Image 1 (tube, rainbow over the protein chains, first blue to last red):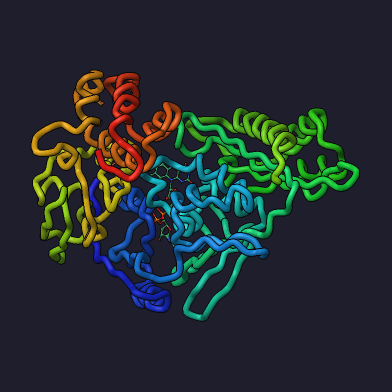
Image 2: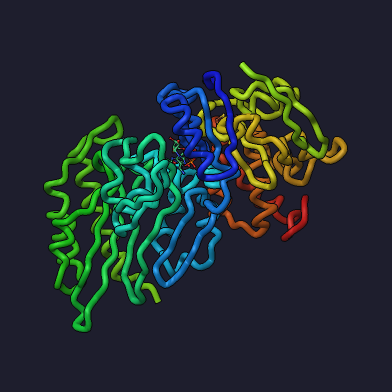
Length: 289
Length: 161
Ligand SMILES: Cc1cc2nc3c(=O)[nH]c(=O)nc-3n(C[C@H](O)[C@H](O)[C@H](O)COP(=O)(O)OP(=O)(O)OC[C@H]3O[C@@H](n4cnc5c(N)ncnc54)[C@H](O)[C@@H]3O)c2cc1C
Ligand code: FES
Ligand code: FES
């Protein structure tokens, strides 16, 4: 399908982009990689008459690694994440997750900020941001604010972003040494959106007991989730197949699971339990240096 | 609706195209530049038929406005052959019968050309992984994979084929 009539604007600074959003209101949308917005426009699932391309806004395309964690500028592409040699050590789940996002040519253009703002409940980066307790830096007409990812995703394709705001970056907290982690997702074909996915990581204390377990799920509900009940099962216990199976089974019991043409909610819940269990088993075998 | 000229380099030649800002790069290439080798299948990023190479990277030309490509260097499937001679990749597709109806072929050739220029030592798994973004309804992919595997020999790090 063809696009509706569009005006195409290229602000040269963040302030100019925000001013354009203010000026044009609901007629305008930001354009980053276009890998979600353009299909939405073609299908008339989104509508606007003005596109504000962020490509000339300076400073949004950097990956910064410091002892305070990893910061991804909103214009960082999937491709940049795949090619960054630091990330497999400082945020290994990100390197694992990006392999599951879309396809080669789409990863050449799709970006961090676009994925967050799009807010698809089956997408990997929003889920990783929630699971890791990442924060999203946002700029608007009244200055900057930052929001925990957990408060950012509200409903499918609906976020806490105001229409006149721009996502600046995503910040992941530091990744300690010797952390165990796993990432599992299931989709019908490679590169498709996940039917369900699980992200896990935990640390172990000096007695080998699990501390700070994190279990995230996506493709399951209206937004990405933390599976608090599964985390409780792990806390203070030794890693092992019995506890992993119990955590997976009990952890998904009370989750409000969505159904669609690809999977009813019972199937999806069972799938999630399987993926959580696999991700935990994977984590027990995969510890960062 | 506003029409504005953009200047791009297509297959080595500088061109000025008069395009309205709503049209996709795919349509601009086909209808304005008259290069119909770039095929349009799904128009929403799924099939890969419209893939072209922009500044060295394989991208979906159906998910880009033509105006977004202003100033860039574009290679379409027409740009792969050299003076009417098939490139090694194209010749390998012919040899391995990797083309049936040919609808998917332009997008697969451009994608694989961009891939092998970046990763001339891509193994079968990597080639299949990247190929997962291009839908072919005819061949079953086996011959395509064989053709790409054989063509790797003519790509080496940093050089074109
Ligand atoms: C065939 C196909 C398969 C895909 N599979 C997957 C998949 O498996 N997993 C997955 O996660 N994604 C998938 N995607 C989507 C892809 O990852 C997109 O790149 C991503 O969702 C959006 O990023 P973008 O830069 O392309 O954003 P755009 O399409 O440019 O924008 C998306 C939305 O974000 C807004 N926006 C963009 N940048 C900002 C900003 N800085 N601040 C505020 N708002 C902004 C836009 O206004 C728009 O509403 C797929 C896409 C396609 C076409
Ligand atoms: S026409 Fe562009 S991906 Fe199908
Ligand atoms: S050769 Fe017919 S679709 Fe691939």
